[in-house]
Amino acid sequence: MIFQDIFLTNLKQAGITLTDTQISQFVKYYDLLTETNKVMNLTALTEPEDVAVKHFIDSLSAYDTAMHNATLADVGTGAGFPGVPLKIFDSSIKLTLLDSLAKRLKFLDTLTAELGLQNVTTIHARAEDAGKDKNLREQFDFVTARAVARLNVLAEFCLPLVKVGGKFIAMKADSEEEITEAENATNLLGGKIAEIKNVKLPNLEDKRTLVIIEKIKTTPNKYPRKAGTAAKEPL
View 1 (cartoon, one colour):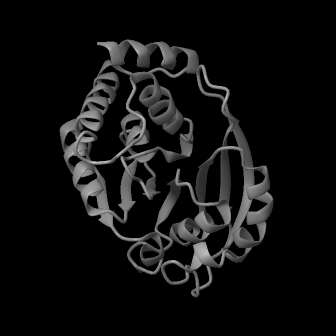
View 2 (tube, rainbow, N blue to C red):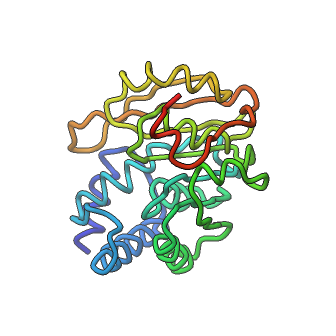
């Protein structure tokens, strides 16, 4: 009950309301995450307060009401953030979890089955390869990423997957410099920085930002470049 009590307290501070079923799913998520983390490196954060705020509530901050009944790809999903919390929050989302490490996806397959989540697909691929796959390229209404890569690199990983008219939501820390740096990449890839939202999490002073990039035109065929190039030679 310790995790549940901490989670409920922080949800109230964040102004988020969940059903009893959703709360139970998050508690089970916490249990599976921390248990699996003993044998597999999924997260450096395992304390109840950290998981409740820095993983679960942080993930929910990326929710957009237009995600209802939409397709969403979470790139470099790791232990499922923010994709799985968003799916728990809105079960209508058609979720694709993309990661380059197969054992993480095995955990996510187990997790989503245990939580009873439907319409969840896991894909083992690097983002650069996924962006070239005709079954994935420009197929998603929303793409999310909470990865540590700089925004101009993340944009090349993620914007090729977004439909024209869709959105890429990058979850960043203090990102003013990165946003300026990423304008060229965003334009080249068919995007436009539409909104920058500052996020305040309960009991945390850390600056967190949602950078919302609209896809306004098709990504040129030459992007994304081959694996490793975006990080070495950012646009």
